[in-house]
Length: 592
Image (cartoon, rainbow, N blue to C red; front, side, top):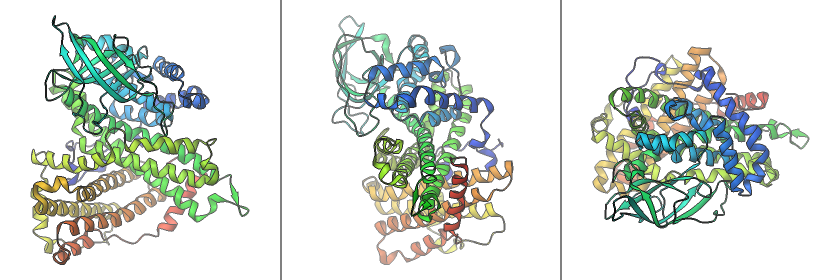
């Protein structure tokens, strides 16, 4: 790692990053590889042979498989050693999220337990709560769940109506209310429950045990996918919760909920990688066995296009996921020296990267939806048959665009959070955007003849950043405070920001990879194709946003600037994609 400063969340919009200063998956240590292999072995021996039984919604079977993963130490990856865990880095936690992400419904149950079921107590609990609950959650003795959403509340995390009233003797909070969409709810031993104390404006959080009198667990929901994951409604009827089970401070629940959501979004961005790799492997194996018109379908250009695009989207998303994970690790180390409680330091570091968390959540879930959709298509009629894994992968994928805040909410968050951080002077967004917008005539044409390959790519990405800042400036100037109501324009801006982060992460990864292992044409093919497509997408998003803000007849100079800043050299994408697909076909599995 170089000595560069740690970029703040969203700061990538105005700062350049050196490839020396990012982490790439090719740098995993031997220990990290071994942990990943343990996860793969566990899926192969304990999960895949039981997938069909798990899909029938057998609660006890899922609970027993989860407990087994706890006995093997897989549940303690992010838990400190004093509470029976392994205190692994955030990069390693993401690698575990990735490898277990290939486990269909099991991965949802596992991630819910290890993440939202355990970490609120780990990060916000006092030492007594951690000793009592976290150590047993880390071993799998207890299974955890998280109870935030309520009927009618949807994506509004603070809209819940569940109440908590202090008992007359001051020893208990009396809990009344209802929660829904509770993952693991059918069999979880502990529940992190959010409720408003008395007439508080914001929620507080409590640790509730399933055996407390008055806790009523509903039947499992019938869902489109992730059928093996227990999802229930839970009712609280005068439940007496000991006062010592208040998590964090009174009224801190909303903050806990939001920060845990940021973590959940990041981890989702990890788990989709494993699901996508499994589907790509299924796709290429099928394409290399299935014959049509006397020829293997893997030799057809239309199929190669699909296989290559699956690889490109996954490789790019993976680059972004591990880049931000390493940034979080660096910030964690810094905060642990400044804050007295290591749990709080950890969650502060994770929740700091709210912009990137929202990007990974949206981009990763949409990447996986593309991969599984084309996976079904490559399988043809067989892809629609329930006997193929790709059919299950297709159904299971769909929830990811709704989980952890819908993609619609997260797109708005990408822009809104970046702007809020800039207003706090975390980085210089508004001044730079105003300067660019007021000096359109002096923005130089894109130089498409730079000698160095990576200088050329960096210049393209710099152009994307400038254009996004200009569009942001015009949107703020044109709509003012009502920009928050212009969700179509916010979507355009979010799409541009996401493309910038993923493009840059991909470019930095390929550059670092070449310094480590020398030039390999296929990685340049991935980067060339990605940037070429991103430029066209960013150009359209910018035009859509600008025409929505500025009357078309007054837009000429802005559109000329848009063309200038998204101008990239032509790429023979047909041949580039064929070379990517050929490597996949030759390896007969994803080995990028």
